[in-house]
Length: 188
View 1 (cartoon, rainbow, N blue to C red):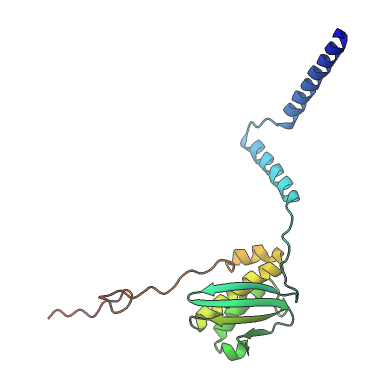
View 2: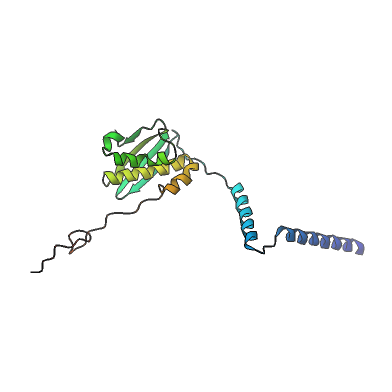
């Protein structure tokens, strides 16, 4: 019986020694900044391998939905595969926006992602003016494209299209003609 106990004790001490050896070899000694950079690159590479690409979020009809906002305007946007047709509040883009600058603003997300004439867009815009609505539609299209194809996220993010532009009109203050403009000064 005493021999059985001593044999198990020897086995456990041998197992402890092997685990300490494994731990020492797994943890590399970092002496310089180059070693630290190499270790972090290895860790980032292992993390990149384990990351799973996000799934596309589409409804039953194969559309992606997003809401865009700019100034006081709000746009509800649906993006679906098509031929580049943009419909806003039941009208074509040419009917709704007569200024070419506003049409250019709306098409920017497609140009940045090289998806010109690949998607049809249906949206409803409300509130604000035409400029704010065009910015809201651009924001909504960018977010909907991100939902439809998550691989486009980096291109849209670098262009700044996924970030809401929160600049709004400053309110008028009392004793002022506008938000900051004073009334004309009269010396006499």
